[in-house]
Length: 461
Image (cartoon, rainbow, N blue to C red):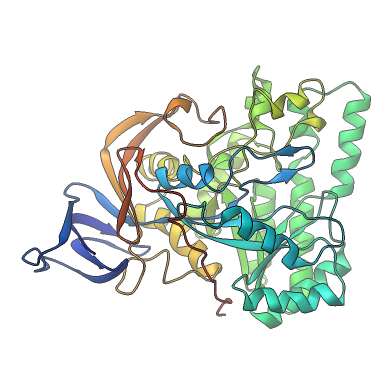
């Protein structure tokens, strides 16, 4: 099949220009002006006049079908990737849940292939999850890389947190493998102490979720991880969902001192939502970790994107129904499952709140939602780029349209959007996955199993 996308403004991570794109057998074959292919038979033509043509979004932080204690995320790999597709995301890399205590890394990898294969509608990969550290796990990291999973996540909090000696061992091993270690950075002891203290004082409303996980509890853990990565010879370290200005300052300081291979991700909620949401009647909707912060933190993060201090904007998409699972926390915020939806809203909000609001350029948006995550996590140039040889994954975005985000427009299985009522400038006209139009005017046109597992490559330093 041949697809011809004509007359659009093509936007890459470094430039934008008028041009045409030809996709053959799912791969971009030509990019240029006035490509003479219309005379050929069997060509599907998509007119993108007056619209932007962007590489498909890459969200490297999702939690589809996640089991979290007694609750399970309501989006499986079908519902969640339909939402992703309708939001312009054509590739995800999912953070797998914890498995049984003591299990090998491949236990969860096999489980997740069973959850995703034949269900996902966009292309997908997985991050490993490190629950304990011993010689067998360190050896198995090499086998995970061979199986197309050159990244692993380490938690500094929660039940399977890893202590500093284990962190150092994982960093050294992943550096040797060319892999990337991702970190959830919060000081576990501080958070546990504050949660217990607040509950004992009868302070159990959603706002106390934010108070129990202060900025400095995150920033301390970020600094600690950066020191450990330096001890490991500047091992590649990726900070997930960085949420506050103190954590960003820690990263900037380490870079000023010459430390290399530091990658920073924030999420769309930390750019546009603030902790006053916890004071609303439906504050449980916004219980996530790290929690929402202040407007000053939001602006510091936007500035971090504009200056190149933050490389990736993801979502940490992990939805639980407000009318069901979230109600576990109605009398005690510590009982509320952590997480919120966002995989469908990310790119629209980045365009409206970032580009149209003048905070970042369109090229910078492409960098953080597509090109950079693809580069860091071994998908580039197959994903995250518009060039011959890349997959024909495209977003066609109409900058002249406006819409109001409402739950009834969304495709996730969850019963709310965290961005209800927000007016956004710009609308996604079409989404193509390997040359196939899978979304048109917010209508999903694909089918289960259209997505393929992405065998990711190690990091090239």
